[in-house]
Image (cartoon, rainbow over the protein chains, first blue to last red):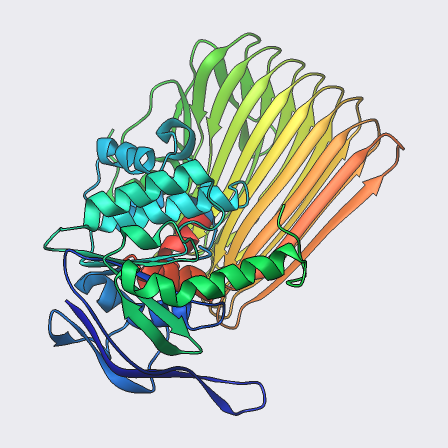
Length: 249
Length: 307
């Protein structure tokens, strides 16, 4: 469904030098499957998502959707072709309501559909449909509204960038449940979840570990987990000793 | 009565009118009254000493509205009008005003409206004034409204002052005096484009105990247009006042926002916020990721911002 061939991405640094963020990435995402992309901070996960959405350009390589090359397409064109992206930190809009954004995501949504979209992400429609997507919403509320928009698009490829960030434990379980129901074994769609949450990994069909802009490993949970478990345990111990600069409560 | 196409477009844009509305109405066209009707509770009388009307709302009038739009379609006309609104005690009414100028000529057309509101104790009024310019002429469409508001004890007024588009030059001056327990909210929305210029000065003096006032301004300046917004909140008693001006700047536009707070009483609590900035790239990208083009995304953001 979605294929990346030898994709690299660079950014200009302040000193004028180019820094390569993603190096020769080869990846394929099939319909009906759920993918997790994980790895340490700064490994290139969000950059990869933005490259797929067309927000970041690529320096080399090609991207295909349904075997059609989309590397040259704009964000709008890719969205219309069937790629959707739930931002890690969605922007706020003064004057636009939650209902406005959902209607932009899917103009066919009627009031029943709008209400269902919010209920699916654990928000009460009466409280949120007419609310401004402005400073009055918390980070967790923004995140759920963002996910509701991507779910509403019913895109062929949906990318969720750290859906767990800022969302309470009960809601993240519900959101993950909705994503699994919507995408797993669905022959028309695929979902990619960028995550640091180890509870999300077992429910995914395939896990891709990105580190320093390269694919460190990929495979099923059973194949990949033993390879990254030690790193996660090590990070936990460092956190417990305060060596990460903060304490686990 | 059937309006011609130009009048119908202007009336629909500034006052959502497609036919003569029920209730009290005064439609002024090219310096002359076109339609004037009072209602049992809202009396409209022409002024005897100068152009304009007195709108008198009887005490206790509830849930009624009055429409007083102005049309300027005659090339070169400089219309000047003085209107006085007296809102009786405990009345609760809506006033729909506004001015639309259609100018197809090379001569400037303009309308200066001098409005005075006397809001009696306990009265509530919602006032909506929209300004709009249309027509293909090179002559300017000029609107210079002056509004004076006197808020009696325990009264409430909400004023929505909107410049939709097409107005080349505007100088708006608003003065308000707020007595005990009264509340005034002024919401201003302004869009300028091409080489248009707009200046708005609002000064609210809160003179009574527990009086309160808000000024909320949202503006968008595009192309080579320029805007100056001055908002002064003066607290003369134990009161609260807030000024908020938020602007989106685009192209080569210039915006000056000058909020000012003056406390003349140690119990006055006055605050202000001001922000000017372009549309954030991440906002555009976000809407484009939902399938909008860049132009559609810009228009959606501006429409929402000025809503």
